[in-house]
Image 1 (spheres, rainbow, N blue to C red):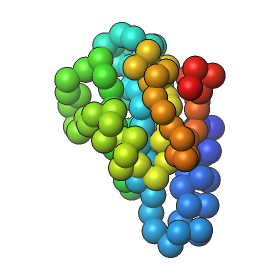
Image 2: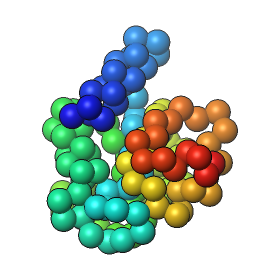
Image 3: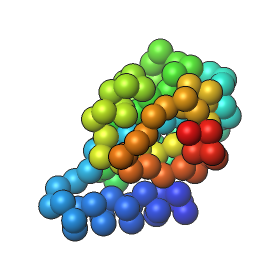
Length: 114
C-alpha cells in the first residue's frame, strides 16, 4: 500500500500541475526479475489495485505474452506514451533504457543501471 500511495501522490500532483490525468507506465509484473511467474507477485497486486482505483495504465511485462484481464504493451510504447513511468520489477530489459527527460519512480532499484 505504501507504493500505491506514492504513485497516487505523484499522479495527484501531475493533475494539479497539468489539469489532466496522467498515463502511468508500469514496468514489470512478475514475482522477481527475469522470470515469467506472477503467482503472489506484489507488482501484479499493485497494478490490479491501481486499475481498480481508476488510474490509466500502460503495462509492460517482457517475460509474458499475455495475462488474464490485463493488456500488455511493448517497452517502447510504455516509455513514449507515459507521463510517469513506474518500475516495479528490475528486469534486465529495463536496465538499458534511456529515460532522459522522463518522470519515473523506481521501486525495485533499476535506476542505478540507467
